[in-house]
Length: 209
Image (cartoon, rainbow, N blue to C red):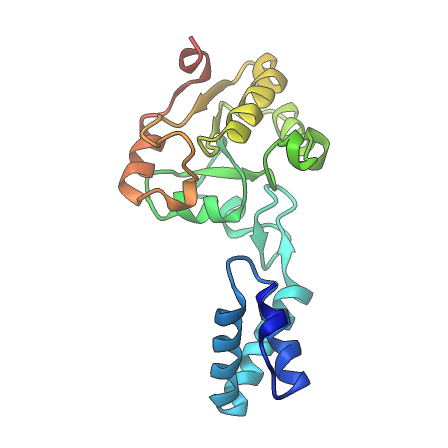
């Protein structure tokens, strides 16, 4: 580990670098640069930064309907009267909701699974928000479910599992058009391509024919 060869003049500095280094995609050099940057900032700015993190952890909620990150019990999308409540777009996580919303091509609601089925990583169907999705269909009023998951092996496995679970409810089950290369994750796809993929979605049965 690179941290072992870094010589710190302060234990407090070292501990801060270790904590920043736990963030995904942040190496030890980047962590040190971030910590030194914070040290140069006015105390009020640093306090505002730490307060935002504390409030994020303590006050954040998850929508009881779609499981998207929210400030309220029901998120703004699920509460909006302008959304088509009979159209559900199933996504992996909040980042995908944000990516799709940025296209301005979708006007239904969402269901956030909280991950993808991945036996290699020990993630099975029971670890995801699948039962609550089934419950939404059982409650009625749904005319289409769009499976908007990443074009990866885990994404395709999850789509196939969901299709088997939902196909007998008599609703249309669609997948986004594959303008997205295999192995691509939704959050990294440009807005035009993603928007076109949502708009030109196809029935799942046709995609596996």
